[in-house]
Length: 410
Ligand SMILES: NC(=[NH2+])NCCC[C@H](N)C(=O)O
Image 1 (cartoon, rainbow, N blue to C red):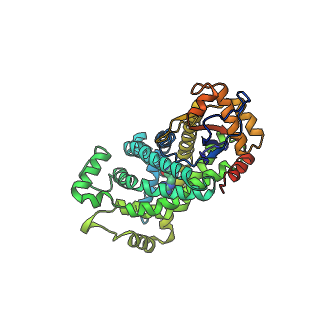
Image 2 (image 1 turned 60 degrees about the horizontal axis):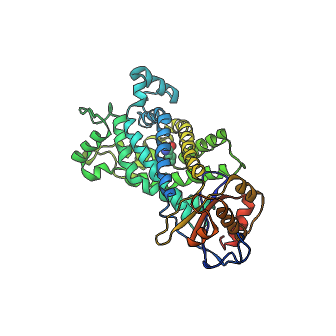
Image 3 (image 1 turned 60 degrees about the vertical axis):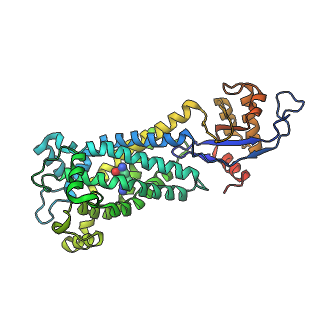
């Protein structure tokens, strides 16, 4: 069994194995390991603290992204809903300037409370679901796994994302719609929607959001993963660039659907509604305006996506890396057996990086090192008394491939 984390080139590999012969594995050779029958055990990582780390990393990464990206989002929504026949704005920069002139910087940061908490939450779901689905899939390293994990994450976050973006859109456009009511914030806005339009009203645009975010998030993660694989050790600028480009390609993959979604959420409900569903909205938009309808605001979206997702991916990667580096072990909970956590020092990691060890060699190494010095288990006997052992080691790519084939993994 091998479970790997994503985000960085040098993946920590988690090994969990079972020492079968608990009675006398060391034979007569002192602290050396005898011929023990080692079985690699496929173990679900579902209870691992790692699972939680993904969510927390997503939360903080999302918040960082919002701080950098929100002004661009305000511009995007203004442009998307501008009147095409009598446009207020001449373009992205003009829109930006007009908002600042009319409303100062507050205008750009209007409605940020909703995405701040909301995108934090959404990103916790996105990165949490994505990370765990990807790790637990049968072939975690393939781009296909990243694709599926991204799609599933996209669906999962839609249920929070749709009402949140609804409130955000209505707040951002509050001068144009809902005349009369001055919303104090997203919660106020959502409460009002719930009261006047019911639960259906609060989930207006849900289907459009799901349709948007399946391609959106699969492109997001596949492109990030792809870019990170192009270099051996990604530098900080490289990681930032990869995150930024991943954000941009994500929007390119779903932009027309996003335009329709925004229009539907800006639309009124009931008899005042202009659109009768997703398709109707798309057709009316197209008839009214031609193909440009589907690309209005794309510039500002792409411009916003770069810094926002650079910040987001960077913070997420940094947190995941920090958590891995700090402990040096993956603490794994197992329902019915005690665990020994094996912490390999840097030297051991380096040794294994240059070699191409077989599974057995790796396992022996872990046990030997663990037996020599460790806070969790100080003697070989201690290791053996705990039936399960796990360790995190960094292994070079070729070794990983070998390891994977030794374990009968694809
Ligand atoms: N279509 C999407 N939702 N793509 C994912 C990008 C998410 C990212 N938080 C952004 O707003 O740029």
